[in-house]
Length: 354
Image (cartoon, rainbow, N blue to C red; front, side, top):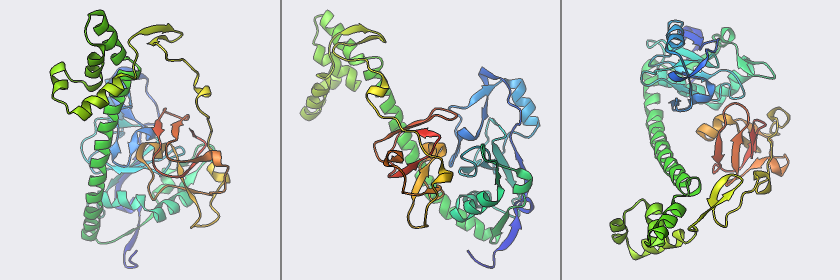
């Protein structure tokens, strides 16, 4: 970092440093979204699983300053993911925030919003902030009156914008890939539900047999989402693959303790088909050196993936607490997040199970 960069405090470069609501209004089925630290991602606030509050409560919290505006920088403030996730608001956000999220409003004459966001994602900055501004052993949290005094090194404003421009172009590509992956995941979930929850191929076979039609062709249509005419336009290899898949499904549903299931399938408890392992408390397993460590997966990483800002742990832990590609991980603290891990070898923290 250039030694000529100016050293300021957050309070000096921000017009406002606050957090969301310290009271939690009652949830409603239909209302306005209220986001918390669990809804924060590096690309913004994800409201898909945010709870909702009444319009009246929402408007009260807006007047209290709990709704961020475009340009604000949001930081995870409370809990095990404190300071691990940061983003800025790129477009108007129709949501209010809980106090687990800090809201920083940069002074545009002193600091670029994107630069401030990226500054908070550097490993050097994260280490500095966590060493000086997190309190609480059971529930880590950032105390804002102290956080305002945190120092930040600033290049000239134009240099900030040029730095941000380069990093933003990379982030935009990452976000595009993430959106593509999200679309593919939604497609996979829809297929899974059709095949293994609603049993559409089995039902299609059963109905076709009852009507005296071809059960195999009916299952192939259900599996591919195509009509009979659509099947005729497929290549021989595609048809062969569809036939092989259709053959895996029976043509009858039978009663079970969980309701109707395909004939020949079994109902078993999860503990008979998988081994479960809780993670370890990070504080007891710090790395012995900077070059020999495992990245740590927390709830935040289940949502955003591993980055250079991830905490580090000793690799000398019991093998059962080391995650590898292909493991299924889920959080048991806070909201339920399930992920088929494919991000490499990692240390499993105590708020997650594999």
